[in-house]
Image 1: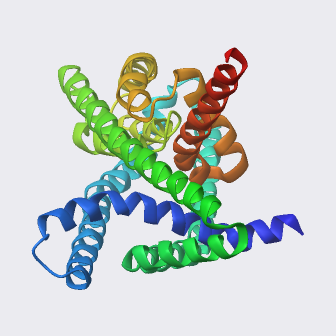
Image 2: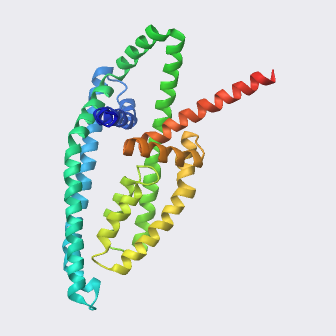
Image 3: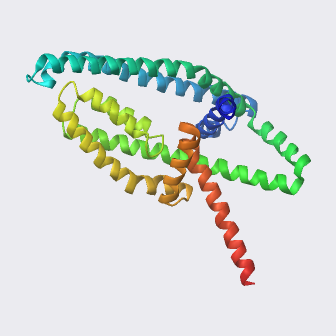
Amino acid sequence: MLGRLFDALLPFLWGGALALFLNVPLCAVERRLARLPLRRRRGVALIVVLAALVGALALGVWLLLPQLAVAVVQLTAAVPRLVGTVQLERTVQGAENALVSLMQAGMGAAVNAAAHLGNLLAALVLAVYLLADKEGLARRMFRLLQAIAGRQSAQQAAALGRRAVTVFSRFIAGQCIEAAILAGLFVLTLFVCRMPNVLPIAAVIGVTALVPVFGSFVGCAVGIALILPYSMQQAGWFVVLFLCLQQLENNLIYPRVVGSRVGLPPLWVLTAVILGGGLFGVAGLVLGIPAMSVLYHLGKEWVNSRLEGANE
């Protein structure tokens, strides 16, 4: 019962997360269109943001899919060379079975993704509606809370909501900066090491790094798939380079770029990612850190007020 309820509410959770994410570039575009009336400004800004989103997705597919197709063909053709000559027939048969299993897993993932496409489209439509009338929605929510709990409680809830939006905006900006830095590091490192498919690999790692802490490991898997047909040795070195850069990111870049923006210590960042991802999946990974930041600062303020009251 609870599982069905969660599945039914999942598009709303994704829609809210997507609305918060798109609100950051939406506000930036609206500031450029300050001379236009609000309704016209909002419409133009929404069109610009959605067009940029679709363009970025199309560019990513255009860059990545041909490379993946070539990698699959080359990997299939290179199986005898990769497995060596010892017990070749048996090893090749095992490798072919492994490839078939991998392709079946990929087809299963594609079917699963298609099954969730409806939820993603519904979340996108919901996000557009939320962004189109966010001020009106905020006013109606304030009136509802005021009718239920009184004006003071409604004002406190509104202040908490504004803080949450501010923290999330800073978090998204930090994630984008961190992803760009990580992608740049991979471009430089892979180019120096003369790895193949440098730009597609760095682009995938940069995009997947938008999912906190664990997202770039998906990019690592794609990188291995794009390098392995050329050289198993280079694929091994790529894993080593990835782990080194990942440690640099987790211990130096991420806490300074993202943690400092949301005011959350590194331990609490990791806690937010683990709890959010475990409870709500990818949406929880994205929303967990700003939500934990708000709770962390509320708890800090409560403790300080209690200690000040005890000292008086």
